Image (cartoon, rainbow, N blue to C red; front, side, top):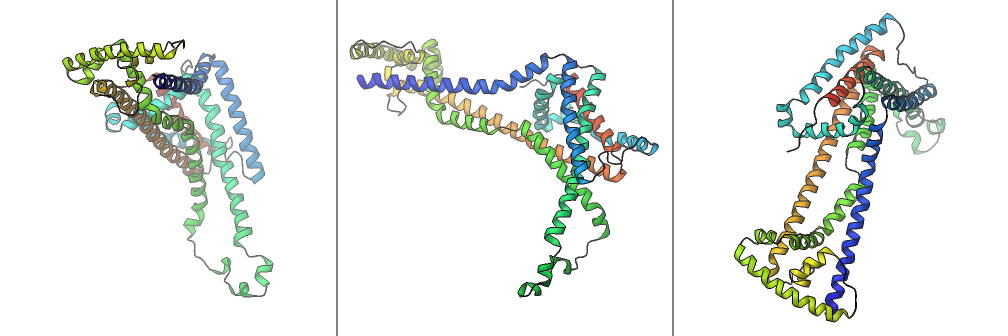
Length: 410
């Protein structure tokens, strides 16, 4: 009986550690929710001020990068009629993006592609606290102070950085050094890169640099967006640890629930009469077990733990035995714990897969959008065109997130 008492105390300590770990995880998870609630509680002017400060930092980084690399920080934009014409072209280029945003929120489309709904839910969770109280003019200001600096950083600054990297690569790795060109030995007989006489078509030479910049900028922006939407490493570790202890934890939870509602065991056992007979036998056995535990404890205080009480009522140490050594009367309790653990694992896997699929879709869409803006900039040679297209597309997304109702989860 002393062994039984030690086993009960060990399981009690294990469950307390599990509950403490769950509380820590919930506190960590609630940090993001507290941050969103704090942002939502700010007045609109304060939110716009924070967005303006962030945009100022991005603009400063873009101008410094462009200055260091010798790139035009405005990307060819100027207060001229040609730039106004480029902005008008950008408005036309934004129409397909706006139409795609509207079509993606249609019910038939979301029924055919449920991952779109998951992506929109993730976007709404992050963006809605920022835009919920803003009017149309404030939304326009918010989009402007975020989109314009982002385009300055992703297009002209990134193009200048890649151009300098390409120049350094060509001078240090492609062009032969004087020592290698004139040095004796076998290396002098090896054809050098400039002697390979590669033929690169003129069309590729003219457009490869711009396309490479657009693609690289798109993938960088997509990586940043995915970091906000994807499952974090800490969440994966928490889910893995929860999987390892789910069976044991939910066996205790089943004992606690069964102590409050004995009818759960009858439904889980499948045969009401047999389960009732087994419950009565377990109750008698539990009474004897409590008497033996009281004699063996010899003055040890009994802990007020709900799972311990349920285990005593339904067979004492049988509910705490994780080795499957109980008799047939304990089968309904084990079945109930197994069903609860299986339900928890299923929900966790579905949540993990849903977040991963939404993050992958966001990665692809963001990379395509930024690459599209880069191609527009290369085609018009004026940053006003991609900035206008991105501004209108972003403004449409913000309006849809703000005004469309939240999707009900079935």
